[in-house]
Image 1 (spheres, helix red, strand yellow):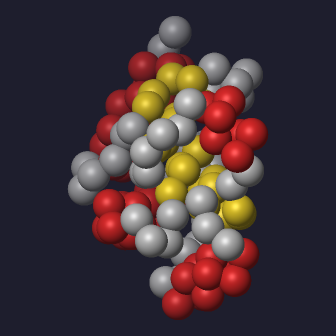
Image 2: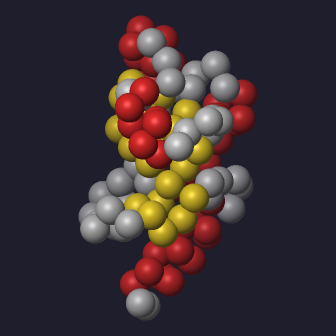
Length: 109
């Protein structure tokens, strides 16, 4: 799962507990979450530490944002191992269920 977000983005920050639950629900062999933050490195480092974010986070790059057509935060993509996008903007309190459903659909193809 690729999550474009920012520390200054209210909806992004509210989504972090759901992403933490998602991280806990799946093994690394089933799902990897990568958070790409539209921030400066110091703000991101402090935020990750203060909020105990357990999944990989890094500073986003404008070229990556352009390639994915990012115009608003948060924007998420569920990507299969071949690089195909199989879900977009999956978020909310039922995120674990949404991802389980998408992965089940993917595996049955």
